[in-house]
Image (tube, rainbow, N blue to C red):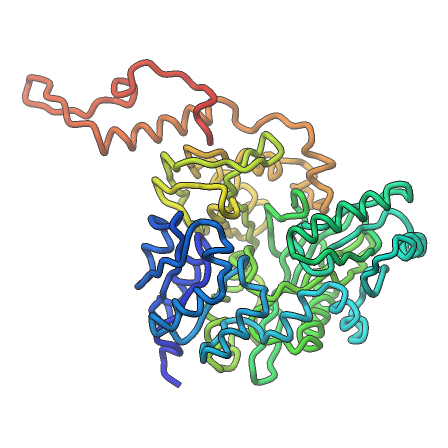
Length: 507
């Protein structure tokens, strides 16, 4: 085996996660190949890669979800491996099977493990046999509404209906009383069919005041399996995470060990290899229950890297090449506190509706303990074709209060004009007394953020506008001769002329 592990890896993804994987390749001295759609011809990930292959028009099914095109692009560029990132094909067992058939290495778990953990019902049965604590509910999907009524009565209302074949909040409905059950079943099945081409659903007890806590796991081909501590992901909108942190204030050393051991047991029971995440719900009495396993690198993996000093994507590549887990992963400790905010192109003041447009100004925050994993640059086009995540902002500090303050300041310093973002919403979350107190539950947004004053007000938009115009004048405005031998650059106000703050400025 060479020091470089692989000579060349194709990254079967786009935007910030593709950039993240390419940076890991550069650390290892591996060349990277990007795939891109016609909508991404000027994208950051395409320009960063050593090579790039056009694979089709903007619709994902004709480009990023086309396995045949992905495999052909890898073969045409002499790649030895494919890294799927997250989303798109990352949890589709057909991609690792196609890789194996083509003589390529898949940087991820075996297809059988992926298939098992991708089915919520089958994985519940397997984990029950392994002694992993489960949320009370159905052990299999069903078609008969009477089966759901019986299960709901046994578990006790409220209950949750969930898609058997997927996640990400799709096909999920909370049912508070029996009269709501039939309508919720039909709606969940329709959404599951549309999202996963499978309308199978099941029912489990809805845990009120729950925390969503996940454990990062790593396993190699040599029988080694470890957890890399937890991440709390309770701040969610529409069952999708927007703010994550580690360590969780809800865990003491004893509970952390119990949950970490359970996460390792899940991975071993599934025959898992490579990086994955085991997700749990924790109730207000300290009980925890297996939720699901994500068979890929997670969006929020950087906060784990920040508190442990590791590179999880580099380790993914090493494991895929057949190497043993790095020695450091057997002796890790958590140092300090890290928080991640997902920077979506969406309107945080209007029910998180997607926002599109061109990025007219872009300034990233910087400083000790601040990291930005971004898939955009000045001039990037944000379209409706793909997930609206543009970047991830991560901070690390000695403790949680300092991490919160650092994140608030970094969000204010993060300037994106041209599309709307939910930056101000996240500032309000971070400043909320309940968040500061560590009382972060999956119902946090619905309980505390339905009525709020928009953070910052007009002066933040003004500051952003001044920064944008200052940058613009430096690039475009010629120096003015004052007539006394001096030259000056016009101020932003002189350059602009008449101006006002209006709805055309989106921050």
